Image (cartoon, rainbow, N blue to C red; front, side, top):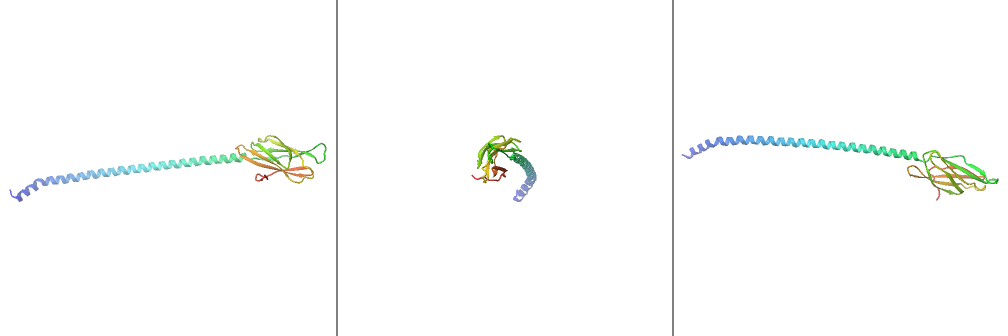
Length: 200
C-alpha cells in the first residue's frame, strides 16, 4: 500500500475517534465547570451565612452591653439616692440655761440636737473651748442627743465649738460643728454648714 493511501486510511480510521475524544473532552469540561460553579455558589452561601451569624452575634453583644449599661445606671442612681437619703439632716433645738446655785451669770447649759433625717450614729464629739461636755441620747431618725456643759464666764467672748463625727447608713463619715457664741455668761448656738473645717 502506498504511503499516501496508508495516510488516508489512518486518517479515515482514527478521525472519528479523535472527534469523539474532542466531544467527550468538551462535555467533561462542561461538567467540571458546573461543579466549580456549584462549589463557588456553596462557598458564597456559606459566606453569607457566616456574615449573618456574625451580625447576629454583634447584635446580641450590643444588646448585652446596653442591658449592662442600663443595670449600671440603675445601680448608680440607686446608690446616689441612698447616699442622698442618708445625708445628715440635723436641727438645733432651743438652748436652755439653768442658773447654778443661785450664782448670777453662772449657768449650766443644755443643748438638744435633733436628727430629722435618716438614722445616724454619733461616733465621737470633741469640745473646743467648752467645759465639761457630756452627751446623752441617740441620733436615730427623729431622735435627739442633748449636750450638757458649763456656761461661759461673763467676761468670756471667744466662740467655742463642739465638733461631731457621725456615721450614716451607708457607712460614710460626716463632720459637723456647733458654734457657741458667749454673751453675759450665756451661749447662743449655731449649727455650721458641712463645709466648715474645724481647726486641729
